[in-house]
Structure formats: C-alpha cells, structure tokens
Length: 434
Image (cartoon, rainbow, N blue to C red; front, side, top):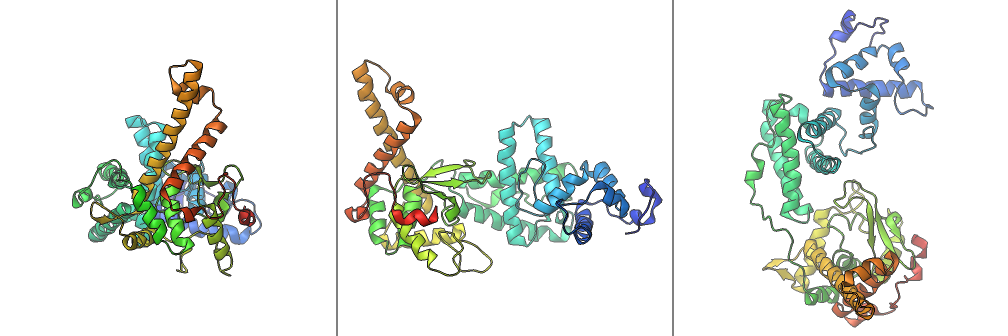
C-alpha cells in the first residue's frame, strides 16, 4: 500500500482499487496485522493503533469500515484476532463478513422486533452453532460471500443439509435441532430480504426433513440401565452409563469433559461448564455417583504418555476428543449388546439423560415427602414452604444427593457399590486430578 497524507479517500488511486466488501477487507486486515506484528513483536496490543494505521497508509480502512459497515477499527480487528466482539462473546468462525452481518441482524431484531437480551443471546448461540458446523463441513465460513455466487448455490444447500443431519444427531431432540436450523435460516432470509445476498442458501431446507417434535424422549427403565451396567466391560463403558444416565450430561458434553472441569470437593464434587453457548449456560453438574469409576478411568488415561486430559480423547490427530456422533456410537453399541431398545430402536444417550431427570424428580419427591412430615409436626399445611423456607439451600442439596444416591442403589446391581461408601465423599485416588 502507498502511504498518503491525504484525509480524502478519493484522492488516492490505490484506495480506489479497494473493494468495500467486508470479505475483501478481511484479507487486507490480515495483511495489516501481519505487518503490525512484524514491526511490533513485543507490543501488548493485539492490533495496530489508529496512528500506526495512518502512518502506514491505511487511514482509508477507517473510512470504509465506518461509512460502509458502521464498524470501528477496534471492532474489526477484534473480530479478526479472536472472533469475538466488544462484549467478549466468542464466535466459533473466523469470517469477519459473516460475523458482521450476523451482528447487524441481531441488532436489527432487537430494534425492530423488540427482542430481549435473552432472546438475542439464544438466537446468537444457535446461529453460531450452525455457522460453525457449516465451516467444519465446507472448509470455511465465508457463506455470506458465497451466497452472492450463483454457481455455488447447490453446494451451499447440500452443505447446510448435512449440517441439519448433524444437528439431529448431536442435539437431544428434533425440537432442539429444528430451533437451531430455523434460527440460522431466519438470518439468511433477512439477508436476502435486505438485498445483502443474491439468494437464500437454506431456502426451504426444513421441508426436506420429517421433524419428530416430541418434547421429551422416552426414558430408559430401571431394568434397562441395570442391564447396561452389567453388560459394560470397561471403566470407559461404565463411564458412558454414568455420564448419560446418572450425571445427565448431553451427548456431546461427556467426551469433551476435561480434568480441569472436575472440582472434586469431598462433600460436593461437580463438573464445571463455562461455555456460555451451552443450553443451560455456564454452570455445574453434581457428581452424585460414579467417582470410583471416574478415578480408575483417569488413572488409566494418565498412564498414557500422550493423554491430553479429556475423558474420551480422540484417536485422530486433528481432534482433541470424540465428537458427539462417535460417543453416541459407543453408547449404542453397548445398548445393542445389552438389548436395550426404545420403541424397537437401539437406545441413545438422550434416553439415558431422560432417565436421569426421572431419578432427579424422584429425589425431589422424596425431599418433599420428608418436608411434609416436618410440616405435619409443625401444623403447617404446605410441605413446600418447609422445604423452601426452613431448610437451607445446602441442606436441601445434601438431602437431594442422599435421596438420589439411594434411588440409584435400587437400580444398579450390588457390585456397583464395591468399595463405595454411603457418604458423598470421593475416592482418594482422585486427589491428583483436582
């Protein structure tokens, strides 16, 4: 680029060759970042200063971003360097044009449709998830740019169709998969309506599928979970039963659990999830059973020289842990051996997760019945008031754990409790992994 002291972008022939398309500006931005880092290798900043841009002939970039895309240079470079935005949200793709349009769409929905912050966050998460899957399948995320090239229309549609299939595999229900797909499709419909793209790459895609919109999957029965435990031959297989049926984590979450997420406090061991795109947001999952099996699995993993800390590491060099599809395949293989089916089909992790919620509901019922006895002694009519106002949150949680563990003891065979105490303590061999 030629350095110019003029503030008027039209005075420089070089500037006239610049495309105002955000995808093209991304390429320029990456060149600028490389030049900046070469000149300033020890700078604490991730992107150049305004003065540096001016001194090095890039002042026109500020004008194009401001006038054509309503974007400042800090936001532009933050998108380039971290796929985030000013609030710290992390997009899982690296195409600035697509991210920029998605942000504009979300703000437009807030202004025109009155979306609340929670609605905006939910839709942003779903769009992010679909775009990330598109990027993984297609090889990049420049879908907004491609939607202006008619010869790519068929390929884009086929890619999104595969994304839809993956969503149906990865998520707990067709209902969830449909919501993800529909959120992304509305984004592209808006882009086409506002003449930002030539065609909608997801046009009528929902019509290609039959959607089973049942709210909740059928839970596994006590006997089925018991058979899975008896059939399991390794700690890894037992961890599949524990993770999905007893901890209640999602299909994709179990293989992705890292030892850094395990906080094995003696009285209340938990898994910590910090992904804000998680359906329930950041939070903790209580580990109310299975710590011995977890300890043995971690011990075995730790003996592997190349272990990366994940419960289910991937054998592939380009992946850190098993994907949801691979984890589901392992669970279904165990179900086949145990002859565990739902409506004639091999059961999946979502049926185990539904079992977990049933057990949790049973524990809550037991807690309420205990509160009813206290209420009766005190002459109170509403046992829930005793539970909510007379028991501290810590005691409520402790009793839930006790009732949950008691219920699990009724399900699993006796050998599941060998060397396992009735307390909520954990095996000392886990100390090394805190």
